[in-house]
Length: 318
Image (cartoon, rainbow, N blue to C red; front, side):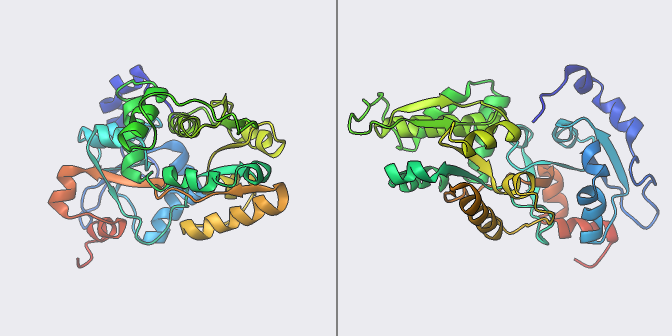
């Protein structure tokens, strides 16, 4: 998740006007309604991005505005584009009160976060699975959007956001608890470096510390190329990974899997067989790509799903 660049944000209206119609090129024809999507260049160029998406749903966007990663939310929120594409749990969805359109035909891959844990640690502390499930089961899409907003938009520290949310959920005490002396083996908690990953890491750290575990903090260790080998080598004991990342980036799977359960089962079996690592239960939130629109357009046109949008563009019967 890249931060907004001030110069690009300031030039956004001009940028959108100059680049309107990039990608597929043509302006809306007489028999197609005006509709502009704001998207990052990478998504418009990938075979599993714009081209595959339009083929899958059977329609083409009349206008495409190529914007810097992250500016699509602002473009839609300020009325400079009708729809945008971005991350499902991005805090700017809440900032601009955007409405996510349901991917009702299952094009986007599953990216549900889940704790991945070395099996050796679960042998020592088998109760960890149930403890972490109390956390993962509450991480809905709406919850992660709000937590991310507090960090990326409201500028609170991930540590504060994590601690306050856990207290509000009655998952931890307000006062720090003592370490259980019977639990001699420390648990090394890792984490990636972006906003959501940092928050997930601190949620885990504070939850385990409240239950009496000694936690070694390796949150913010690095991205996939760093943190995955660290887990496999035993340098860290657990961190939160996304099912789609495990499938595509780590396993090298070459087919998109959009069903969360199927994706989780594939990574669960491969990680265990090849690296003795356990995927615990995944969160309901799916941090995949999403299309979003403004609250106003959602109400005006009744767009609830991507198929609704396709029907609007194609002038198909509703």
